[in-house]
Length: 228
Image (cartoon, rainbow, N blue to C red; front, side, top):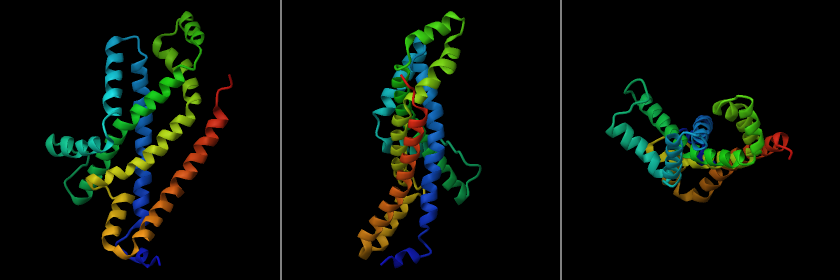
């Protein structure tokens, strides 16, 4: 039944490995940029608050497909942004991969930011006031007192964001990144007699990726949750 998987043109493991790499690097970038954004959103500086609020509202409400297409057509083709070192075929693939990560980070960071902001709201105000009374500045209060507790409070929501990111990596296929959904499209074109089996293979593949991630992050959430 699954003879089509023996076709050397179908690099199934490579496609899912690309999905894992997209998820991993995008998750790291999203956590970093999302943390910076939440710092802006709760900053006492009006300009920074305005920027953080505008950024989150714009990017969170823009379809991910539009953002990914913009990174390719807008930043790369129109503005000439090249994140690879040369113009070879491999470098073009690397450029598409990095542009996709840039798009995922820009989009997913907004959800990380909002999750962290809800976590910040769970931290008792008295702790921040006590820290300021001791002479700590805003950045010190945020990084030493507030954010560590906020992160522990929102592991479960962040887990949902990361799982959604893993699924969203399928959008990268529209700019030519050779991840799982692009391979699935090729297989659907060429294996018209085995459509259900093709869908089954990729559905199982994503379940194998998503379930362990959800279980791991759920376990971490229980281990580090803040006891109130």
